Amino acid sequence: MSRTYYIAGNWKMHKTRAEAAELAKALVSQLKGGKHRYLVAPSFTLIETVAPIVKGSNIRLGAQNMACEEQGAHTGEVSVFQLKDLGVQTVILGHSERRHNYKEDDALINKKLKLALKHGLEVILCIGELLEEREAGKAEQVCETQLVKGLEGVSAAELANIVIAYEPVWAIGTGKTATPEDADAIHAFVRKLIGKLYGADAAEKIIIQYGGSVKPDNAAQLMAKENIDGALVGGAALKPDTFVPIALFG
Ligand code: PGA
Image 1 (cartoon, rainbow, N blue to C red):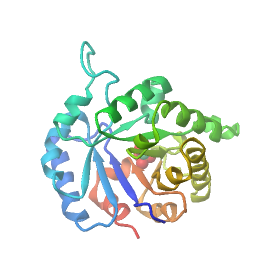
Image 2: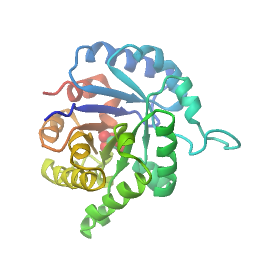
Image 3: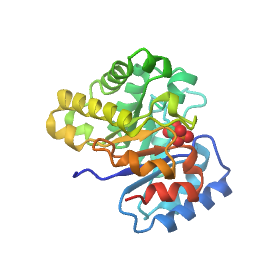
C-alpha cells in the first residue's frame, strides 16, 4: 500500500495549558523517529501553548472545529485566520459530537470545509452512522450522504488536502469498537465512492482513518486492514502511555 498511516489525537474538551504542554512534550519526544504521520488537536485555548512544542517535530497541529465564516459578528466562534495565525495546519470537521450534540448539518460542514481548503488547511472530514442507523441497515447510506454532501463543490485537486475519518457513532467513547472487518467494509465502500466521484487515482490515494474506541490493543488489527489508513483517537490520545503504542504500531 502506498498510503502513509495517519494517526491523530483528538483531545476534545480536556486539559489545562500545563497538562497540554506536558502531553505535547511527551509525544514529541516519544514519537520522534516514528514512521507514520501524526497530529494532535487540542482545544482552541490550548493551541497557542502546544504550537511551539510540536513545531519542527513530526506532529502536525490541528483544531477540532472552525467557523463557517471568515470574520465578523459570530460570538463564540473561531475563524480560519485565527487558527492559521496560531500555526494550525489541519482542522477536524463534522465530528459526530458536532453533528449530533451541536446540530451541525451537512451544508454547514460543507461550508466550513470549503473555507478551510480555500485557506490551505488540511481537513479531516468525519462521517459515521448512529447505532439505530446501523441496525436498520443504513450505515452505508448515511456515510454516503455525509460524504457526498460534505464534499460538494470540492475539486479533485482539493481532495488531496482531505482525509476522511470513519467514526461509527456507537463506537465513540463507548469502549465498543467496530470489528476490523465491519470497519474495513465501510472504508472500502467509502473508497469506492471516492473512486466514483473523483476517479481511481484519488480513491487509491485518499487516507481513511478509523475512529471509535481505538486503543493500544486493537489499533494494529484495525490498521492491518487494507482500507484502514490510520486512526482518529479520542480517549486513548490523552496519555502518552496509550497514544504512543497506537502511533508507533507496525
Ligand atoms: P474515542 O473517540 O477514541 O474516545 O472513542 C474518538 C473520536 O471521537 O474521535
